[in-house]
Length: 124
Image (cartoon, rainbow, N blue to C red; front, side):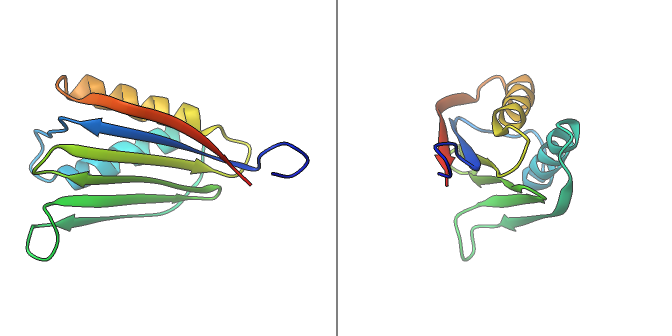
């Protein structure tokens, strides 16, 4: 930390019972994250989703939106319903706002999803 004040913060969200009604839930999740980033007024630099079919890795996906202040990611193990969201900002935007938008969208789309843990970690 510089001068007692952090320059960046992570907000970590861990969910269980994640299930998507979408056939391509990784692409759906990437759209959701991108919309929340945009709604927060943060500039997106790049985005990508990688879908895992269970061949080499467990079924699920990894989605990332690179922002000019850092990143927002989602990692899912679809067979067991685990979803991890990570919002990291190193600038003027508060990661809690983006995390809250994502959380609200998730629970409105999937009534069975359960937030197990929400943690904010200040960095440097």
